[in-house]
Image 1 (tube, rainbow, N blue to C red):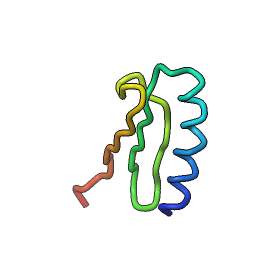
Image 2 (image 1 turned 120 degrees about the vertical axis):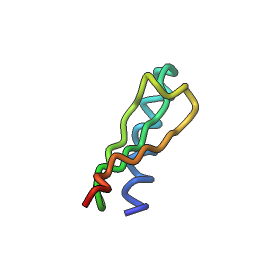
Image 3 (image 1 turned 45 degrees about the vertical axis):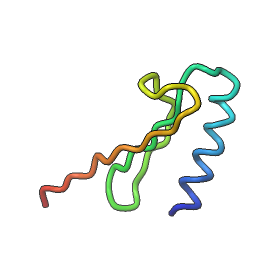
Image 4 (image 1 turned 135 degrees about the horizontal axis):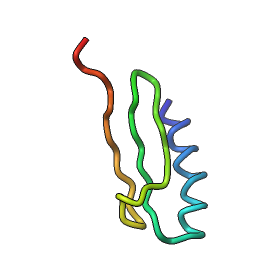
Length: 57
């Protein structure tokens, strides 16, 4: 799973470097499920992680 996330971050980093406006946000959605995206809330040059798993179960 780490390899898949790293590959996704590497790919989106190419886009971030072209535009130089947004950082990268990695969101854990559930067990084994992640979303990697450019985000206006993350400063350019940074990568942030968030955990959106439902921990109530």
